[in-house]
Length: 253
Image 1 (tube, rainbow, N blue to C red):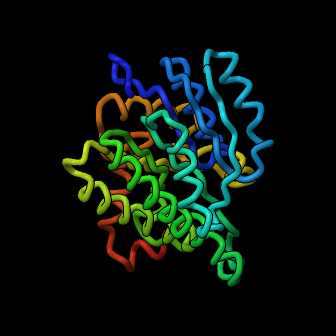
Image 2 (cartoon, rainbow, N blue to C red):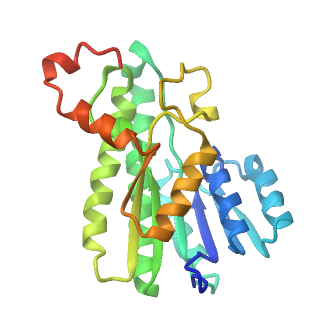
Image 3 (cartoon, helix red, strand yellow):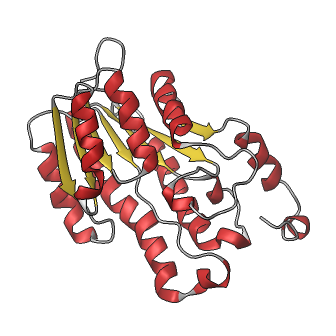
């Protein structure tokens, strides 16, 4: 259960290899979170994060393998995590891939991997997590979306469409959860300097994993439904959404 200050004590991270996930759990352990399940592909990649959490006071840190593309395994994975005996206070959905850029975006297999990971895989795990959280009667889900899902752009048309699908699914799921004791928060960062965006030209308002993590923790305490990082991205994307299509298509974004 959350402590007296509203901070989660037990955390399940889906996509623990993410830089944003790592920055977020570092903040949460400093706010008295003590139990962590870190899940993702090749758990050895986030072994150092696990050791850091233990050094900062975490009492239990478990590493588990999770492949977003292996949707047939997701329900069993979630059941095993929740069967450990301790309630899960917070589920952080942080996995995702960007895929290719330019004309290579339209390469068939690569494009499908992006959609299957960012939308199908995420939705698959969230469906199982939702059932377990509703059954326990409390808990929060934080889902990392992106401003890329706000409007189709030629530079990231596949990635953006995958995040748009995830965002709409989460909006509907949040409405369905009303009255259940479970809440869902969607996080929409702009460009974040991470290993996933290494080699990309950083645009104005680019941010860091640490700032996204701070916004996530603040949003949890304020019980916010949608978090924009940095906050001005909300108004930037609102302006872009309302541009006429003929004008929008001429923008090099």
